[in-house]
Length: 434
Length: 149
Image (cartoon, chains in turn green, orange):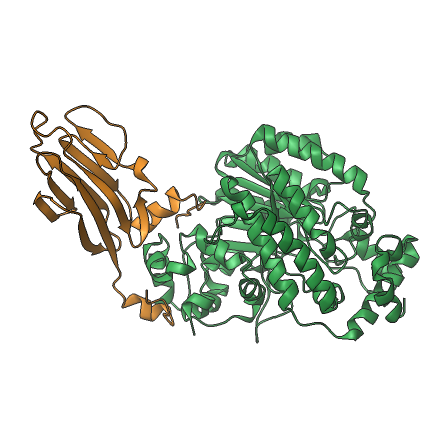
């Protein structure tokens, strides 16, 4: 038991609704590590208030008892490699920092709420003020590391190729009654501060535009920060006009690298078009003083190009963030790469960091949105990948076979080949049956 | 600092204090400076300073903090260079001076209100922290949103 290792303030302020309407207490939750006897609750049968105040009381109690929660595994892994974790970010929103944990918990304006929960079996009377809203899987991209839960295009392809039997459950936000009820809940909440939207592709998801409009109608837009992630393949001027009416916008732009292999990974996007839309967003963001972050999901195919993406972000002075170290699909984990390749990639990143060492700082930057510290944070995040590349254990060879089986199926429908984008992987792939 | 609390129950029993420390260096001209140093209701020093002094005071964690350092009875005709330099002010090892000197106010008989750690006039240098120290620190160091329940 340890408060320092396991305590998190997230379940007192934050909630996530998944694409099928399932409620979770954290956006960083490890989906593969379900707690024993955990019951899942869905917007279709449970209210937000009931879920947040009563149904996750045992989680709050465990956190207060300093117990490890299996679902928190992603954050534990990030902290092991000195990557800023979701837990650290959520703690910071309540003024708590791990290096002065006791003092900052007791100084937090949430301290009395922790205390109330402690003496009431984990219950709270609070409501979430920081949301991640997964609107569903409606998407025009079929990234190879994505899953049918997050991409309708990939879901259709998987079904056609026999990789899945059934399409994912219906998106909760496609149900007009559920959507209206949820919007009404948000509009009646007094303390909503941040809404982060994910798709599918948010820009083309009708519920995204509807929610932006309805929140403006209700007049709460001036108190709310909006965050969302887009895949840089689509543009909607009306959405931009709507976004300008909010207090603050945090724009996440998904891109794996600036190398043509981005086309293979984020199929069927074309890097030349992606770069044009990226520039358009950067201009809009600059004009409106929005916070911009590149969102990347490094896999074994893109990790060799990560240094160039860090460099681009560094030169542009924009943020870059990968939510966590990729765990799924397991056959695209960076740890699949042999140690000598990983060490060589780590060395390149390390050399680049060293060439900018005047920006390095001893103090961990947790507020990744601080515009004054973006470059320092980029270097810090780059170093977490150096640690990860050098320290992770190599995966089973069987995973390479699973990878080859998967990409061969996709390539049969897409008419492309990994070797046209990453010839340096030829031997590894051939050895696994490619 | 002790930071291995097992659970929230243990934390309830811990009464944390905040430690303030000052390092004050006199500039002795013909006459040494006379100073008063106060933190909240505590008087840490009153009188002549002839050599560097280190002052310390603990206060309760959530108390607001009102620091006043006063230079008084300076005779500008006899000892025009008499002054004090606040070389260091730390709160729980967080360096306010020299890093955050601009957050203090300085009222004196020469109406020179430029924030400074060099006090060369009769007057009072004040640093007020009107909320729990760690919330203030969060804000001044740019740690981002600080949500209220």
